[in-house]
Length: 430
Ligand code: GLC
Image (tube, rainbow, N blue to C red; front, side):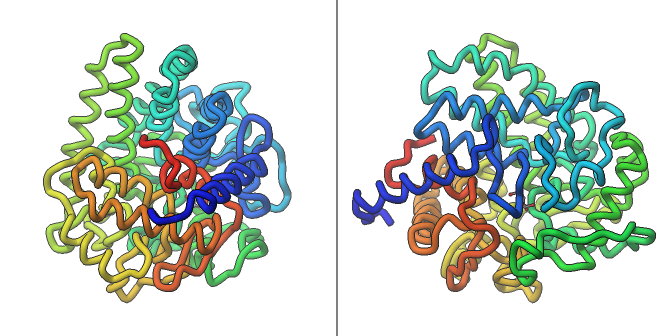
């Protein structure tokens, strides 16, 4: 890609800007029309990275709208249902968060779970593009960002690493990491439902029915407890410490130190979080697979999964105990990197969502971390592969790592965003 002509790069930049505008619903973007018609948490934070390349004011607005949906207890929901859309399931009525413990009055309708906390990282990168213009907007967001990180540390970091209470929280919905924990309970009594996702895209690219029954069962489980964090932590059969959450929170907390310094705020509390997360990351190290893994907190077992989240440790800022040999093996095994699951594993499926396909946002974080750690060859390979996929196959949701087939939803916000903010030859360094 680095030999891409300036005209070609310009055309792709223009297409990416067009997609962000297309998915703009006025103050927030949807991930893509049809399949995902609401505001998703980490998608929105990535959208800000894209907007920041050409409309800084709009980038700040995206972050502000996102953080305005935060619950009183600090939790930032994974979906905000600004306007009802019958084409999506499970909608606000299924989540039933109106009287959730910790939500507070007057909040937008939302889900009851969160997503990887990348928002502070893109608040910092947005600010860095124009510090004078961004200072007051950053200052206004700061207490909310502190509240979000505090919520994670208080309610999800009992093992040091950050746990999820639903596969959707990790942002890696059907990753094999969750298979053991999902098989350990029966989705008994799950109310009848109709999926909508498989009406928008090919069912072969989506989670299975067995997974879906459990997703809905876990939603009902949380709703029955009014989304009370303590009750869910004590009683849910599903609780898995996850590298996506752990490393994005670690990175975002390092970025919060920078933000606090820029604002003249104290950093001690934030530094305490970082130390705790670093110790927690050790509990995810799998010596057998030589990389970071997920740990089922109910069984106590590591899951044995080599995923793209395994390689977020550099993004998290870790510089020791690194999975570089495992990464090199996985890179060598795929035509397009980074596959979301180890191609050498029998559970690898090249088109099924988080069980094989390449995701641009993960590539952006992995490659940026590698570059910061001085692992330039691997960082460049991942960026080149991502740019090549987008250039040849379009702004798809994700891609087959073997032949590059574009999959899932098309005209995808976060793919356009990481193009503008990172993969494009015209992108400015973060
Ligand atoms: C899927 C993805 C998740 C994303 C959402 C919207 O659920 O797994 O990471 O946030 O779609 O794009």
